[in-house]
Image 1 (cartoon, rainbow, N blue to C red):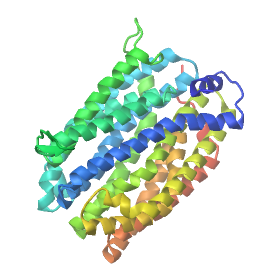
Image 2 (cartoon, helix red, strand yellow):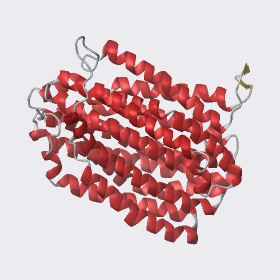
Image 3 (cartoon, rainbow, N blue to C red):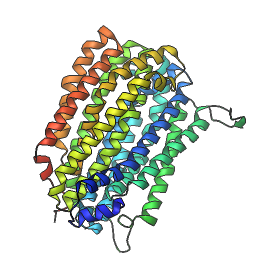
Image 4 (tube, rainbow, N blue to C red):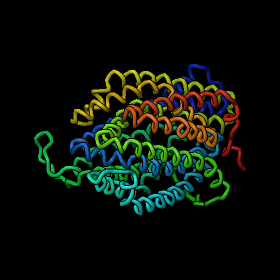
Length: 469
C-alpha cells in the first residue's frame, strides 16, 4: 500500500490502524532520510576536498559557518511559512488555494533571499575579523562568504520548491533533488577548488580557486537543481503546477499567516545562530587547531542527526495534512509516533558515532592532531543524539500544526540559558572539549522540554490555513 494511497485515506477521513500509521510514517520518512544521508556523505567528500588544502582552509569555512547557517535559516523560515499552509490546504482538499499559496511564496522568498544576500555582500570583508579569525584564514573566509551571499536567492527558492513538494506528500522528488545537488556539488567542486589534476589516471582541468571554489561549486549545483525542480513541478506535480487562468495575487491574509508561522522560526534561527556565532567566538581564541577540529566534528556529527531532519519533514507533512483534514483523532498519535521513531533512530546513530568517531574524522582531514581532538568531542556529543532527535522531530510536528512561537522560545531559552554560559565557563578550563560538553548538556535539556510541550494539547489545536476564509 503506497504512501499516496494512505495519505488519501487520511484526507478522506478513513480509519488508519496502528500498522498503517507506522507504515505511513516510514514511507514518508525513508526518502528524506536517504536524501539527508546522501547529503552528508557528499558533505564529507566536500569537506575532505577542502581539508586536503590544509587546516587553514578548513578553519576559514568553519569560522563563518554559523553566519551562513543564520542566513540560510532565515530564508528557509520564509519558505516554511508558505509550505505549512500548502500542507493544510492539501489536507482540506483545496488544491487551487495550495497553488495560490505556492505562487505567493515564490515571490516572497525571492525578495527575502535577495535582501539577505545583499546584506551578506556588504559585510563579507569585515565578518571574519569581527569573529576573531586570524589573518591567515580571514581572506579565504571572506571570499567564501561573498560567493555564498550572492547565492542566497537561489538557495531560498530551492528550499521553497523542496518544502512545497514535501508538504503535498511527495517526499521522493525533493529527495532526488537533494541527492542531485550533492552529487553535482562534488563534481563542480573538483573543478573549481583544484588546479589541473588527475582522477583515476585521467587528466582533468581545474580553476584552482581553493576555498572560494568550494562556494562556487555549490552555487552551480544549486542553480541546476532549482531549474530541475521548477521543471518537475510544471510537468509532473498535479497539485502545484501552473493551471491556465490562475494568476498571481499577493493577498494580505495569506502573507499574514505566512509571517505568523515564519517570524518565530526566523527569530529562532537568528538568535540560535547568534549563539552559534558566540560559540565560534568562544572557540576562536583556542587557535586554528580547535577551529578546524570543531568545524570538521560538526560536519561528522551531521551524519547522525540528518536522519532526524528527514523524519521531521515527514512529520510536518503528516501533521499539516491531518489538521487540514480535521483528523484530530490522528494528530497527537502521529506526533508521538514520529517523535519516538526519530529518537530511537538517532540513538542508534549516536552509538555508531561513538564507536567510529576516529574513522569519521579521519575521512575529513589528514592532520593527526585535528583527528584526535575531533574524535574526542564527537564521542562526547554521541550521548546527546536521542534527545536531540526528539527535539528535531517534535519541532517538525509543531511546524505542521503552525505552532512555531512557543517552540522557538524554548529553543532560545535552552541555547542561551544552558549552552552559552556553560561553554564560556568550560572552554578556558578544558578547551574545545568543554564547548562540546556544554552542547551535549543543552541538547539533552532541549529534548526534555520539547517532549513536555508535545505531551500538552495546545499545539494540536492549531489550524492557521485550512479553515481560513
